[in-house]
Image (cartoon, rainbow, N blue to C red; front, side):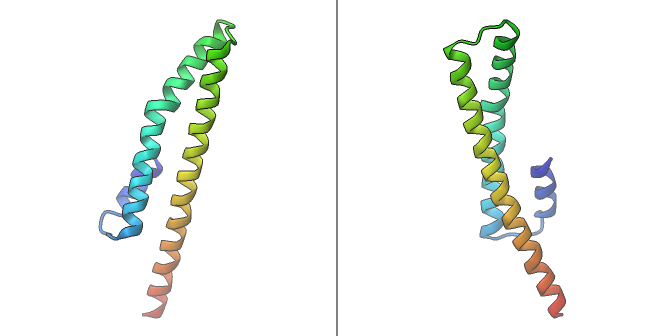
Length: 95
């Protein structure tokens, strides 16, 4: 949802900050689809079967690392989005 909202707001804007934010969102989405969702399914199945073995804990570590990466990517996008909004406010106030 954050990526779709950001894409809609950035539709008319260009520049290096927009490009970085777009690249981060693509990476976060891929991370979610390729690592987080399959890991969650795997872990749910293993936990449901009571199989808390090395594979379970290995995938759990992978999922935690991927989740931390997504938090970092989304945080960086939030920071850049706030900076962009402040810059836009200053520009509008100067008019």
